[in-house]
Image 1 (cartoon, rainbow, N blue to C red):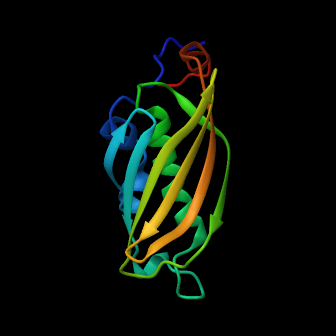
Image 2: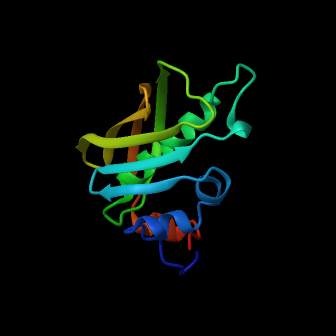
Length: 146
């Protein structure tokens, strides 16, 4: 059993510090973050397009998932995803700036539901629903989190 403390994600820079995929690889930026709410942006580059010359759906999902994570952990808790789904409405293109806005819809005990809208300059391109689960700090300690 490790005596390492569980991570505290009270500030976006703390949580994103170790999330190199979102920041360094994909260029995401946290614009807003508060209890149950987060806004994250991502510029779409040519290397983010799929074979149809539209932004890869997995990257849209990743952006929404990052906003979801920020909204879940804004209070300094350790909260993880227990599931998520996405529906795509319109394509994104190179040069777009995608904005994901996450909002808490309900919280019962340690479980939460968050909705995330992903938009570009032309409107809604996807909706994501994430299910969260608060993880007790003691449990994270027992798994050796640092």
